[in-house]
Length: 184
Image (cartoon, rainbow, N blue to C red):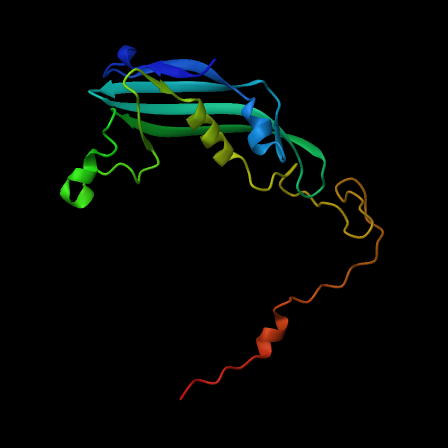
């Protein structure tokens, strides 16, 4: 069931609601790195309306599994994110285009959207902010030592018996001796 707010029920007094967002999106959008541990994400929304402008503050929480980027061991993390978003009435996003200088131009602001006058759908916003809160390189723990590039042992669990590898020279090292002559 989509997470929606009926606009007619919103007033200038902020109201708080609880809801969930199904995590069926996870496999399709980030399934190559993350998997949902729970079928839903918990969402707390505080919303208020002044005329046709609706202000939304949301807290989204969910658990995700992953394989560590260094040692390939499975891990889990909880993603807690919050965001603010404003919704303007139908046709209001482009209203600033007619004003000289574009003073009311909301098009460039990613935190402003247009509502349809009836309800606000929040699923996509919650999913988008969750994806942005996921780490680019998920680690089982901060000081994960990873796998040995020679024998493949997990250095978190056992000592590697491979000989110390010589430090590889930077591919840019030969540029260090390059001297440029200024043009006359």
